[in-house]
Length: 399
Image (cartoon, rainbow, N blue to C red; front, side):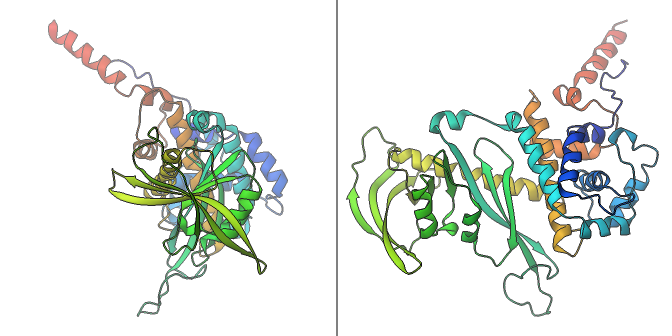
């Protein structure tokens, strides 16, 4: 049998960690002063330990510390200087500010932006399309404000809401904001940056006429769905051209009342009614994009489904059912480390010429985390050694 061509001097985990430039970690540590008063368990050790948790899908501090203790003497290739005990990791999650992990994530996103970006949408729309939505993660302790009714057993089930923005030409979050699950979605609109080169796409849960007025004043486009109980006045019916997609049933200019500090003003918007043949449903879209074709408005909203797929991907592939701390800081650190791992896997997926399902890549990395396999070579042609060996066997059987 032939010798494997996939041996590497670094484990799969070491190869994944090497995607994070050490200069990024050092600059973020310096900016946040996150190693102040820390003797042994530095920020980099903390980051690697939490990334190990995400890759290996560990569900407890004991599981992380126990698994990592078995790596004593084998940590040089992924630059872990201090293997944490359970109490050490717990204290770090509680006391080290989440800001350093947030900065590391955003700098990685900036570094790999060109790899992750798909410019086809921007080439058609000529603007940056951004999608935002929220997802609630249940917590079995009242860490943040609770959701729903009080159960009969008296044990409340808390929740944290993750508000996320993704660029339509990318597949990872570009902005994340946390809030208690009871916080209304529209408050997130205050966090958004407005400019004339951006179009925001979001669900009707974010409907806020004050924000719509602000978007219009800043020449920032938006597409959403109109609420069923919305009050408006029809100003003009726009004729639907034969060139427009036949799913467009109605195109109107409407006027709504906006109350800002008890001062009522009028705001003109556009309402497009569209029939989706695939789902056999009618949708009514609200936008301030007056020059765009009506069927393009519907197509823009359909792109919003990408963020639903992202939430599904994160919850299915990473440890977000069990949290390693009962405090807000620990939960946020765990979520940011999951986002970093999600980004690293997305980068690997983008660099590969061979098509792999995201969940299969995550499973492969988990199974082979500390095997010395050349990750990229193997993923590009996993059957290569088998083909060589099979050919040798057939040749031997011939003689």
